Length: 381
Ligand SMILES: [Zn+2]
Image (cartoon, rainbow, N blue to C red):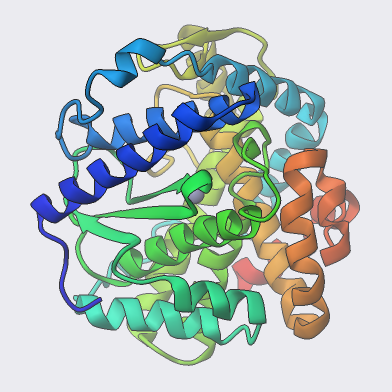
């Protein structure tokens, strides 16, 4: 883990994955298996594109024969249906979250902004120590299997702090962390977040689940690990100056996503933008956002507020973060019992696509809507 991979080593790795996927594709005898492989291949293509490594086309001629018939629209459509099925919850819950911030007059502009440099080795060992602290056998196995072969820390253009690419059929998770980020606690929390995604994929290897992207809950688990990591730092009195800044950033993002989600829940018009993302009809969405800001008054100058409201991201990150905070609270109540049921919830929710899957770890609509846990957390910071 000590040294980062060179760009040539990365290219070699990517070629290697292509070859493995290609081989499996040539042997695949069912449509569902071919679809899963095509999904992996298109992801790999994306990693090699100019958004990330600019390796161009590594796939050779064979890929032209099969064409990328994998249907991303299908995942989008399934996601929209799942979001629509849950829209009344999203609407009520996001309104409650906004009101919680408003009622306690949460000061967004606390003057923290302390992000001191951390060496990469320290970041990695800190995140690993945090994961091992759960004392869970599955997590321990996963963390021990994770090493330099899975982790790519490189500067890239795409606007993400990190990404996880699961290649379930070759039992390989690739984590990309954007090395354009300063190496600080935020960098570490991004790694904790992506490892959360990787852990989920690790559990799925045995269960053949690959469409978790079609539910509104796809950021719950990663956000749980991200939030728990921040609380782990805070509760162990580590980086006392920096940690409040990072928690504040987490809450600001939660608020922004609640704000956008609330507007989304009141609108029907959706358009696909040039990047293939589902957005709200721009003009109407902006009108609604302006009205809502007026109504909130106190939050007229929302930090980091995006003009262009995308449909998927605000919902999954809002739902992810708001459930993560309650999950962490429940984890503290009885960590042994929680961990026992947590893995069950993780492998169930992509199939049920329902919040009910998280009931075994104490998540209920009523509790979330009461907002008690969030309020306590916001006041404590
Ligand atoms: Zn994520």
